[in-house]
Amino acid sequence: MSTRNDPLAIALFSEIAMVDQLARSRLTRALPKGMEVSHFSVLNHLSHLGAEKTPAQLARLFHVTKGAMTNTLGKLESAGFIHTRPDWDDARRKFVTISPAGIAAREEAVRAIAPIFEDIVNRLGSDNIRSVLPVLRELRTELEAD
Image (spheres, rainbow, N blue to C red):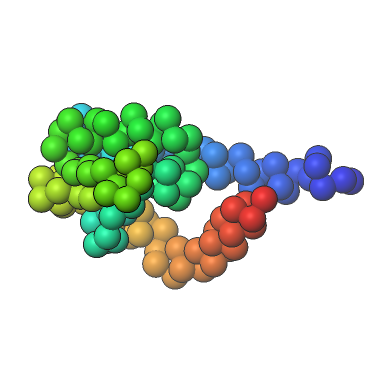
């Protein structure tokens, strides 16, 4: 049987797609009112970064279009969760950083979603999760290379 029609590969990607859909749904319900998973993801990244990023860099990192990232950043900026500034050397470019309000919003979101993750780890067991992480990371790396 060809790789293109491999039932194992189809089952793998079907499970990943369903897990993604279910996880996003649960996270969306748990996040503070008005915050979307994409908002949390950007705030979470910027909070760990400690440096500025351009919208184009963020779009590449999250594998979304520049337009989608511009939309997300616009909502975060309107909420006061990020600051944008022009690049002093190239007026066509902007830099994005997380604001103190964004840090607080991210911390509130983490508190809201932490019980979901704790419940999943308790149900599945940390050993099971540790065993599947290397395979998922390798799969991600392979998909990013394409």
